[in-house]
Structures are given as C-alpha cells and as structure tokens.
Amino acid sequence: MGIISTMLGAFGFCVGTTIGIVIGYYFFIYSQPTDVEDPEIRPLVELEAESLGRMFPEIPLWVKNPDFDRIDWLNKLIENMWPYLNKAICKMVMAMAKPMIDEQTPQYRIDSVEFEKLTLGSLPPTFQGIKVYSTDDKELIMELSMKWAGNPNVLVAAKAFGLKATVQVVDLQVFATPRITLKPLVPSFPCFANIAVSLMSKPHVDFGLKLLGIDVMAIPGLYGFVQELIKDQVANMYLWPKTLNVQIMDPSKAMMKPVGILDVKVIKAIKLKKKDLIGGSDPYVKLTLTGDKVPGKKTVVKHSNLNPEWNEEFNMVVKDPDSQELQLIVYDWEQVGKHDKIGMNVIPLKDLKPEEPKVMTLELLKSMDPKEPPSEKSRGQLVVEVEYKPFKEDAVPDNLDDPSAVEKAPDGTPSGGGLLVVIVHEAEEVEGKYHTNPYVRLLFRGEERKTRRVKKNRDPRWDEDFQFTLDEPPTNDKLHVEVISTSSRMGLIRPKETLGYVVINLADVVTNRRINEKYHLIDSKNGRIQIELQWRTSS
Image: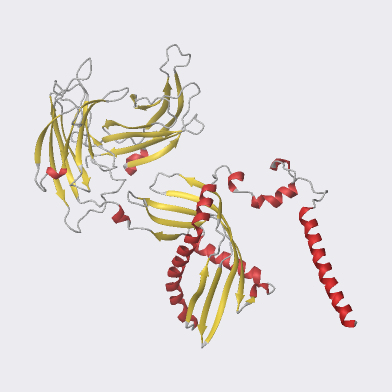
C-alpha cells in the first residue's frame, strides 16, 4: 500500500508540474500587460539636461558636429567583410608583433612569447562619422570616430625557466578618433604610397585580463592603473603629431622617374594668321609635354607682330620619351576674354636622336585631329630648336621635381630687374547677389589685366598667367586682385558687382622667388582665390 501511494504521489507531482509549466508558458507568451505604454519620442532639444547628459556620449558625431559625415555604408561594408578582415588583420598583427617580441624577450630572460590564439571575434567596429580635409599637397586626410565593443579572444603564452604562463585578453572596448593620412597620392593603384595614422585624443580602452585563468582585473586598484598605463603608452607612441607609418608601395616606383631633359628654343614664327580686326596679332607660344601634369611654359607676348622673334630657351623634364610629345600652341593674346588659338603642332620625342640638336620648321595646324579637314589658308610657321639629353645612370639631378624652382627670365630682361609672373589658378565659394559670372582683374603699377569670364560658376578655374617686365624688383609694390561678376543680360540694374578682393605685398616673392597660396577674399563670406607669383631674373 505504501508503494502504491508513493507511485501515485510521484505521478501526480509530474503531471501537476507539467500542467503548471504549460499554463505558465501560455500566460507568459500570450498575455499582454495592461500597464505598458508606447515610448514617447521627443527631439533632443526637449530632453531634460540630466537625460541629455547621459545620452550625449552615445550620440554619433555626425549629429553633434556638422563637419562630420554619416557613413552607414562603411559600417555595412565592414560588417559583411568582417570574417575576412578578422583573419587578415590577425595575420598582419602577428607578423608585426613577432620581430618586436623577439627583440624584447632576451632583456627579461624570457625563452619565448607566442600567440596561442588570436581572433577579433564576431563583432566588427562601427564608425560614428568621418571628416575629410582638403589640402594643397598631394595627400588625403580623414578623421574617423570609431567605437568597438568586441568579443576578441587573445591568448598569449610566455615560457621562462621551464615554466609556462598564459595571459588572455577578452571583452575589449576601444573608443578612439584616429586621423588617417594617405600620402603621397600617386597615379598607380591603390593611388597612395603610404598610410600615416595618428590619434587626435587619448583612446578609451577597457578589457578583461585573465592570468592562468584568474581575472586579475578584479584586483582592487589594478583596473584603473592598467587602464591609465595603456592610455599613456599608446598616447606616447601615436598621439598627434606622432604617427604610425605603413608603406604600401615605393613612391619612386609608383611615380615615373625623370630620364632626361628636353632643351627647347623657340626661335621665331613666320607669317602668322591675323586674328585681330585692327592691327596684327599679339602672339605667344605655350609649350607642354603630354602625359605630364606640370603646368606648361610660355614665351613673352609680342604685340602687333605677325613675324615675331623670341629666341627663348626652356628646359623640360622627360619621363617617357617613347610616348611623350612636345606640344606647341601659338595663341593670340587678348586683354579681355579668352585668348584665341592661331595654330599648333607636336613633336614626338621618339623621333629625336639623343644629344643631337635639331632645328625644325613646323606648319601650324588648327588641331591634331586627323579627321579635321586641312585649312585652305595658311596659319603660319613656327621655328624651334630641340635637343633631347638623356641622363646617365645615377646622374639624375636632385632638384628636377622641386616645385619652388623658377626658370630664368628671357633674354632682353633688364639686368637689374626681372620678370614678375602672376598666375591666376582658381577661386572657391565666390557668389554674387545678382549673378555669378566671375573673372579676375589685376591692377599693378597702374596697369590692368583681366582673365576670361566663367559663366555661372561659384568655383571657377582660369589657370591664366600675366607677365610684367620690370626695371627693378617690386620690393615695395602691391598687387591688387579683384574678383568681379558681370551679367550678359541687357538692361540689368546691376550689370557688374564685386565678389571680393585682396591686396598682396610683393616683397615676399622677391625674397622667395616663388609663392603659391590661397588668399581669403575681403568683402566675401567664404571666398578664396589661389594666386601663384614668380620673380624671374636673368641670373
């Protein structure tokens, strides 16, 4: 009887427990509490100061700072690529850490330190925003706001005196604002030669550390000490302006090296085509090498002359004589508006024999397009002398690519003076109240020069140069540069308006020989203009 009652009791307990679990699960899943309300969504400006203070660290930078852009697309890309990035980064870390560890271990009488396990886990970092800086140098600068609350597993084993100790890093959190600089930018993939990484502030680092399976970070006082130690050590190594440099490619191999010099002497032109209605043309010659981004070189302007003589010499750096061509274009200079092209021709460098001067008389053509029908009327001829001088091995001059190098003034320049060259490159964020069709007006010693007008453009580019032959250096002179907009509509109340101006002291260009800067325009909200100044002398 006792056995039966025991069995019935056990059976009842099992049945009751099962029914209770089923009923509890039903009520838990299908019952809806009546006191739960939908959360109230309010703008940040309406939140209390205390609530906003708690939320502020978690608000993305692109919300708090208008200079930062949102980059959800990058986070999505990293999320999908993370399994492969994880393995690639771990391999790179081990390859970089091994020689450093091998160098340090003998000092502490440690036999070996090895990674038994290294993985960054399944949670990728997220980027809260990005800020991109534009500079005049061949570089790209980015600042990123990174947050990473990951689940890495880093297991390091150290052996010494026949004993083995393991250290494990888990639950890593890193908040940092790195600045990444890609420079120099080169015309070969991936289009930059080096990566430089700096930290703009001390990073926040939090992690768990286990020694022989024991959480040592739980020791009172050790957690804060280790955190501050790591912050200081990382800051000492990588806090701006200190950088971590990673070379991607050899810049000298990415950028074509100079292999020679092309000497060009522009002698004269014969029977040029007349472009002006009144008087003759005002010709000058522009010389450029194809496949090179270096600005072209120009002769002086010969006013009212259809048979001008220049006898000016130029040196041009050659990087690929098999494919480069010398392009010669004769223009008719205009005081206002675009300069008219009289004619052009090219000389392939592969047709020149090294170290052999060659005088050539070139027929001026409308264009080099073979489909262009030949002109019935002659555009004139251009006489030049060219000589290609290849470098000998290990004899390449050091200053060929020096951007501050200035060529000599042409023959006939006053011995005590020189040639002042003003190159108007571009302007940024110029905007008129009624219209924005900007051109630049230069005023120097009572002489006025103007660029062509660019229609409907807040960021115009001209790349026009103007030359002033002076009997003495302009040490105490100033150059007045003014950006003006004119309207093409007839009868407009305000046909012309000033978009901004700047006055440049010329003493610096006499001392430095060359200045290329962007100047903030006076009477303009954000406008800037890039002006290059050169002082060329015959010596």
